[in-house]
Amino acid sequence: MSPAKAPFSRILVKLSGEALMGTGDYGIDPAIIKRIAGELQEIRDMEVEVAVVIGGGNIFRGAGLARAGMDRVAADHMGMLATVMNALAMQDALESLGLHARVMSAIRINEVCEDYIRRRAVRHLEKGRVAIFAAGTGNPFFTTDTAAALRAIEINADILIKATKVNGVYSEDPARNPSATRYARLTFDKVLNEKLNVMDATAIVMCRDNHLPLRVFNLNNSGDLTRVVRGEDVGTLVTLD
Image 1 (cartoon, rainbow, N blue to C red):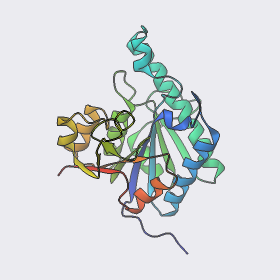
Image 2 (cartoon, helix red, strand yellow; image 1 turned 135 degrees about the horizontal axis):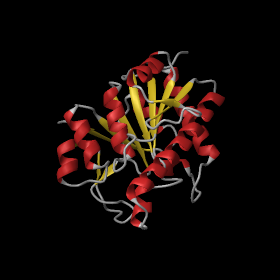
Image 3 (cartoon, helix red, strand yellow; image 1 turned 135 degrees about the vertical axis):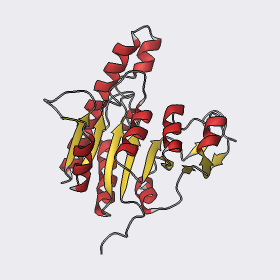
Image 4 (tube, one colour; image 1 turned 90 degrees about the vertical axis):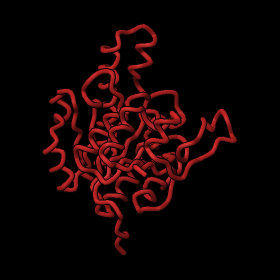
């Protein structure tokens, strides 16, 4: 029996580096990355084109290093290299399942991955390969959230799907306030006006101005990513109106 047709033809999934740690303090949990790869395989089986942006916070976080006294540009470059390491790990996990994947870096590291070129990225997607975008935007002072919004817009993705540790967007941090309200649906303007902790403001504005819907979900709930792509009402949907 073939999988049901998904409502999206092309998606971009934003994964934080911390999501790959599992219960560890740093690094990559092989079981976690294997599970994520398995869900991406299910999505590809639905004939959905898949792009991925991964952060590097499980190895280095540029902003944190800068706060500790390191030069911000140097710290951000280290963070970009950390995202490349995560992207290569994801590529390996996907290929172990028989999928074809390509890592494309915004900074030139030709010995280990391709340069990010928009037209080539779109071609990979059209050929059924998973495109993994590494090194953020290639510029310091920009987050991988902004990189995810930028890449999703560049490749004409139908939706940007952001994986978090909670099941959507809340009025406050639910870990600090268990009574915080979870939103099923929001507008980009409400996110900006109320300074809700979804993505950084630059990423939100880019999504808003380019009419790119954003879905926020809990990656720790096994199968939720697949359910999002099937069109189920999982997490929080952020749209223009």
